[in-house]
Amino acid sequence: MATVWGIILVLVFAHFVVSISRFQTHKCGEPTKYLDKQLDSKYLNKVEFNDQEKVAYRCVRGYSQSDGSRISFCKKGHWTALNMKCQKRKCNALGDIENGHYSRDGQSFGDKAIAVCNPGYVLRGEKVRMCQENGWNGTDPICEGQFSKVLLSRGVDLKTCPTPKMGKRGSVEEPKSVYVPGESVSVTCNEGFNGSGVFMCNTSAKWFPHEPKCQMIRCSAPAVANGRIRGSRVLYKSTVVVSCSEGFDLIGPPQVTCGPDGQWQGLPECRPKRISATGKCGPAPSHPTVELRSSALTEYPSGVRIRYGCSLGYRQAGGSSSIHCQAGQWTPLRILCERKRCGSAGEILNGRFEYTGVSFGDSAKAICQEGYELIGPQTLTCRDKGWDGRIPVCDRMMFYEILDYSIA
Image 1: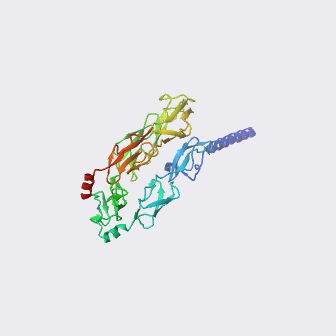
Image 2: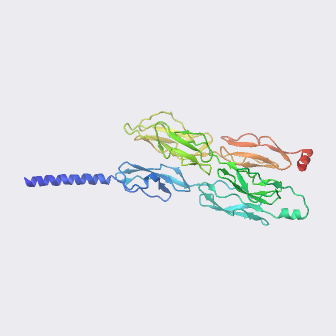
Image 3: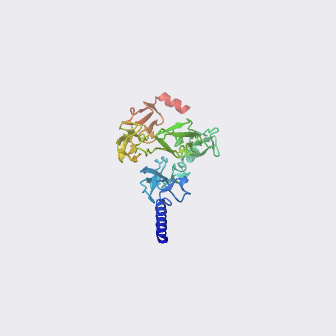
């Protein structure tokens, strides 16, 4: 009898050990590490995760997500592979340097651009600029010539530039009453304003590359796919509150702030809730650059496939245009939409265009040479079908207008 009880105890103990062992193998240790990705901060101090628990990653500084999902799940003791892709952030084109140019090795995060002046000109300002997370650091330098001093020594009367008036928005370093062509001024804007830099008085008695101004920092209207924004102020340090539409969960902080770079700091995401009991999926995911081409419902059956297309002003540059409902969750939306390009707005005889860019939503401002007046629209906008409006004309002013201008 003792032998029988001994066998029973051994079997019970073995079952207990196997059960614990099986339970333990379903747990996961620290999530996988990646060179260009890092865990969201709330997961950093956790060393053990239960089966089916998930973690979220984000791209490291200087990189942005270009494709895939940022979620990895613990399944049977192992982390699922992360298909999230991160690519280096790119900086916009640098401004022109009058009487000089930039020599650069690229325009992605970490690349640098070196300012080089033409022979006979001296560099004033920053020689090296780096492409950082929020764009090129510093401001455009100037290439200063000595021609104005030579002309003044010969008694030539030159047009001059007045000292910029910054008011309470900024200050001018060592201000003078007037500046002759070739002289420069350094402007520093106060907190909450941008526009600091070095500006040069050119031969047309105008500041280059533009009139020094300190403008209040503003963020563009925030947008979160499948979310709602409460609050309308978009000035520096203003905050708005984000909430998600029905059927979506908020991933990230609900309150975001307009930062010093004119960007919202850490906008959250709204991800579809998982309807695990039925295997159905909630509302279709949305994104500012894509449009749903299938019927919009509040609930979709498992296995259904829906299609997307790029929004007005955008074109498909890759990825898949469809997703499907799988086990109560939508597969990742991987369609890549990029802004349509308009290219050059054309040439203006005796004038030029100043561009904010050449893609959908950008603008081109027409500027005439001295002695010419603009006839036609001053600003063209890049639309879905190209630049709107006709190219303006720079027409020569009448003689008496030129005379009055030179006297003034």
